[in-house]
Image (cartoon, rainbow, N blue to C red):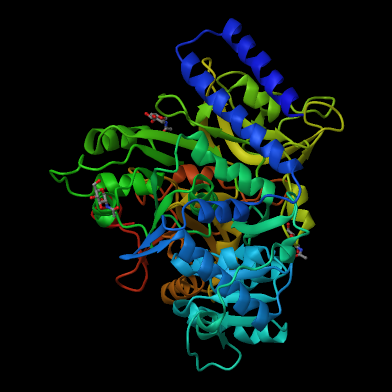
Length: 619
Ligand SMILES: *[C@@H]1O[C@H](CO)[C@@H](O)[C@H](O)[C@H]1NC(C)=O
Ligand SMILES: *[C@@H]1O[C@H](CO)[C@@H](O)[C@H](O)[C@H]1NC(C)=O
Ligand SMILES: *[C@@H]1O[C@H](CO)[C@@H](O)[C@H](O)[C@H]1NC(C)=O
């Protein structure tokens, strides 16, 4: 199998050489060779027994360099050896307290702090998959996320105690054990863990405890906002953990690099690429509780950071900071991430010096991804025959209004032309499986696309619209339909609509994202209808959205409509609303604006509209 892979790779490489000698040939080759090397490793990991997981890679790193620093955090530092011992203690404490055994899922509701790392490692040593809960979610969403991964245990940071308390009655009804990583807690039904951890032995846990884990076992659940409302728990297998952790290697990071994790660990970017990738390389990590633009470069200088991670928004925040003389004085050489706009990128380079940007395209649950390994501005990657041979994908024609693929008379999809925007679909194969979501089969089925190019074939529907150009560059265009991105987070429109409909005066809500000049992504807006005889209750609507939704998901604009337009299939029409935006001069309906300072919605006036355009109002 390995030799087959190598030979196939070389044959295709030769083919590429003959076929398309292009200015990007060198980049293509370097990338292809790196990918083949990583592909061979993955094949090896699929075969060796006992199974070699990212945890084993961590344990090997501990043996190689126990005294190397694994983690810098708020002035503290922890070596590989210390991390190993700490995770043994966590594992032992949980084994004794919660009677955990191989295969039991544990939900982590933790802030970005070192205990996140020890807890995950400790649980991995027991063979327990972990569900990474977003620490911004509350009440209904929190319960939903918790229950769909099938966990019987919840571990939370002390600072999230209030959020846990809010859902505690339901958790207790379901017999869930709840632990807080603190020494004391007065609330009945919440157990404390810190003291038990500090008393536990730091002796290694036997690999026998995880003897039945294999490459297709579930390692993690990572939540993604989907088209169906509440977040979905994407099942991340060990195979996927390996593949995602290889991104660092594919981008050229080495064990001598120092990686700066400033993104949340509950997302795949921070966890899989940052943490798992860092461990795979055996590097030193700098962990931040929260992204801070003002501390960013000071941190990079202080810790000698060489590889950074970004999303489009963080790049822009960095460019918006006041200029300083020492801006180019740092050691950052690679930036890995996704969603940067070309103009921001040029600005970033001008200000902060020569940093190689590796723009990625990938979805947590998806079976296809791209890396921007050449220096083409705006592209997320390249169509590369080797990559495509191993991970077959295509773009198909898509009807945006109907939100479905265009099909021909035989019922098959039609491949998009070069230069045309189409829906990215990845063929589901042994090598590129689509595992799906925990709990709800309907959701998994929705992402499966049958009869795409041939009768009976099966593809994963990414829900993303991309474009390939004539030089084989790949461009990201848009996300289909019901999810939009704001401040680096995906917002599921139906979840927001559910919350809005809880407001007294609102009958129905249609939520969508609108573009604002100078911002990545789309900001939340809702068209609503009111109950008969009611007026829009600004205060009540404000209270509902602020109580139940994280800041990034709250609709900043509300548009009152006499009725909501529906499509033939009773889906609400959004395309026109999105295009119309929120300009009061052009829209006859009443418009409101969420004003955090007034703690209410207020009528959207021309002045407010202008102030937003002039960026005098922060969104
Ligand atoms: C950063 O590098 C400098 C010079 O190589 C070294 O003196 C310093 O100790 C390093 N800082 C950290 C936190 O490792
Ligand atoms: C791809 O990388 C190059 C340089 O490494 C950069 O100039 C370009 O902007 C990147 N593409 C995107 C979409 O960021
Ligand atoms: C699964 O998701 C669908 C929407 O896709 C929803 O209608 C259904 O109620 C869900 N089922 C469960 C058991 O949560």
